Length: 440
Image (cartoon, rainbow, N blue to C red; front, side, top):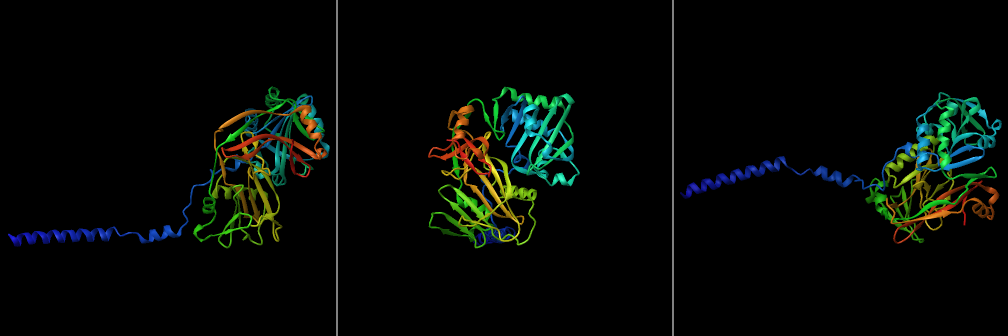
């Protein structure tokens, strides 16, 4: 009996041993996988969503000319703006011929004829514009131009529509002699302007509304992303970075090659990578596409934006000073942030309202953006009437640089409060040299 028990116990031990050997053999921990996770960068949540290039390129406003020197302005996301732009996207523009701007009486066209004028804050390369508006042309000369405005107006007595693409320097104009538009098409779109507030053109320079301009003042909830989250999206291995605290309170994350400067007061970051090649090609269309791709990969878009600037510029170093590029070509690509139909313009109280990418020889060297993400629904809303007509004009004339004003536009001024971000409606003026000011 005792020997039989020993035999059973021995058999159990042998089976248990074989079972353990089987699991050890076929279920060994994957030590290589552990090493891989330790050495590879694991991405964190982006600050915003990726965006397509065609969603970032659109006119900053559409001017409808009603004839008899009557006009109105449509801003992005206003229903009539969307209708007009979407209808034009469904047309085609072909067969471009170069014209001299000196032969065109713009003031006569503006006053006398019914038409549509698409205005871009900064000239857009035709190669980018064709991603939004169907441009079909084999002429490389036109496709290499930068377009600041598109004029479409009807010559009713001749049953003819003229379509003019105005270039950056206004010296060259290309006419699309084969545009898929009729006089009736233009008249139908111009009709949208007869039921909205009227504007008056002042000194052939800028427009102002005739009646008080109504906007909504908002307080929006917001969240602030941590510098570490931005750091993780920019550095391949964030564990290798070190932190430097400067006397002015800003913090720099650096891996000895690249740097991320954090302005804690404004929740603003500037990423710098000075390792751009000494030689390379810089071209506006390519640079804009690279800038959009870079933002998509490194943080994303935390709101609605519009491509607002493509131009040569200077490069920020880590100390915040401006330095001129020593070799090659560099350009700045800026995207203006919007809330609803209006841009959020940076002011001295808060650095906020745009994303900017600087490229040198086609490579990204600096990247500026806010860590603040606005919430989708306002906690406070209040209707505000901005001055218009003679009241606004008198305020403008009291400004020291009145003679230099080239544009007046409604915008939002951001102010950061404990309970949220306040967006206050305001008039902003643009001067001849590109600088801006506020109408008080």
